[in-house]
Image (cartoon, rainbow, N blue to C red; front, side, top):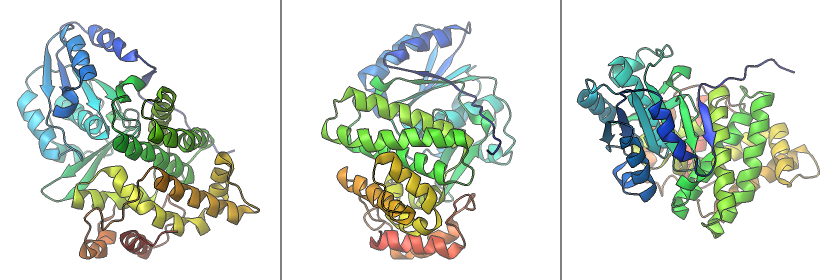
Length: 384
């Protein structure tokens, strides 16, 4: 068995009602000033208002609500400029992946006094933070509460950028499934599919370990079982909790393993169209799976066994799992093409040259031509 490490920087606090423990985490530091990072929409929700009230009972609170899908570098730099002298000791991020990534980057910026451009020059050597970062997800999908990265958008250059490293991680993650109860079905489906992408890609990745494999299996099984249930019945509490747990576990996988080509391919799509991260993944996945099957038969066959769709041999099982994944997308009505996301044919032609990051951890990556073919198939809808 290969050697590997198991370590995460974040203490995870999981369970219904555990948001009530937030006040105790803040109260551990006398005279603290807390910055809340959450979208204006999230701040209108009853549960978020209750959380803010809890924080105000502990001490001074500053609200930062300039949070958008695909968090903007400019918003983080603006927050730094506005609050660099406010004595912020705690940062609490509340929301989906965009809010949590923005909170992570904001915490690092406030602690160091550096802009995002200046921080990016330090990677992978981001300093140890001295402030306290607490993340509270309201979706079950991104795993951002436990991952080591913050994915940001530079609207000037049109690039997707990433601050990454263990020092970027939160100190605490309060994962309370009750915070996801009001999530609309469309958002629950798109974030739930994101869990599956993290599970599959961190398993397929050449950086996978026996530990991350075990976590991937649990997440794959949970998504295939519970996401269709939640599609049919948004009030199903068990499904909400199971998906919240799976999402959190995949945050660990994102920290310890790595995603494959679809995540790299999505970044130019998100920067071009400003669409949700998982929507781009859903558009890419059928084409990627078609490309992947011959290169990852053994692992895809394992996935097939996990969800009970194994075939007569390894090759058939691998194809069965790929088809089952596409069928799941159809079942939850998440089947966009790149055209439907607003990607032009001209953009498809240049996206391959804009893809960055580690591609070699994807066993199906052989050359840049692979990227162009996947993009073209995803644009035309020529998947499995």
